[in-house]
Length: 319
Image (cartoon, rainbow, N blue to C red; front, side):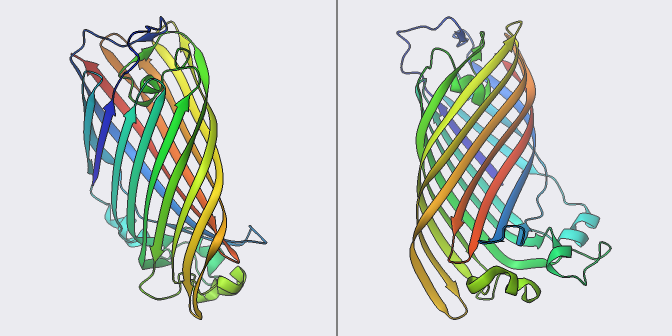
C-alpha cells in the first residue's frame, strides 16, 4: 500500500517571479500515475567492497492517482498489481508499505518517507552460493524485515531561478530555464532483523569479517546535505529537470551478532536524486519521473547500504 500526502504552500506571493507560472485560475489538478518501485539492502565487506550480499524484496508495479487542490494540498493512492506466478516462484513474495509526506514552500522543502519491507530474495545468489544455478529460485530470506524513516530538509538559495514545486509535481510550471544551489539536512533511522538468525547465509559469512553473524541492527544518522537543482525548458512547455543532493554525517549504531550486542558511533552518508522530463501545458501535463535515495551505515566490518527508487509515468489535467 502507498499513501502519499503533499502539502504545497507558497508563502512568498508578494514577489512574483516571471519564470514561474502558478496557474492561479486553476482550482485543482488530477494525475493518473503508473509507477515501478525498487529497493536494495546490501551488506558489503568494509575492506573489500567487491564482496557483498544484495537483498531485494519482490515488488510489484502500482497504478494510482494524485489529486491537488490549488497549490495547497494533495493526496494520492496507489494499488499494487497482482504478482505473476512465475515471478513469485522465482523471487518469493514480499510485503511492503510506502508512506510519504511533502511540504514545499518556495524557499523551503520538507520530505518525510516511511518504508517497510518483509521477505527478501538474494539478487546475487550465484556469488553467495556456488552451487546455485539460474534455473533455480533465488536464495531467499523470508524472515528478513527492514524498516526506515527519514526526515529531509532542503533550502533553495535562488527560488526565483528554480521552482521545487514545479519539479516535484508539476503543479506550477517553470517557464524559463534556471537552477539553484540547495542545502539542508536529513535525520534517518533504519532497522532490520531476521527473527534472531544470522542475516548472511552460512556459505558467505566468512567473506564479511568479524560481524558476519549479524542478526539485527538499528542505525540512526544525522547528515548535512549540499546539492543543486536545475530545470531546462524548451518552448515553455517541454522540460527536463534534475535535483541531486549529497550528505555526510554522524551515525549511532546498535546491532547484534551471534556473540552478543555492539554499539557505538560512526560515519554515515546519504544521497537523493530526482529527474523529470515531459510536457507541462496550460491544461495537461505528462512525463516520466525518477526518484532515488540511498543511505549508508557501517558496523565494525560491514558497510550496509539501503537504497530505494521509484520510476513513475504520469498524466494530469488542471481544472
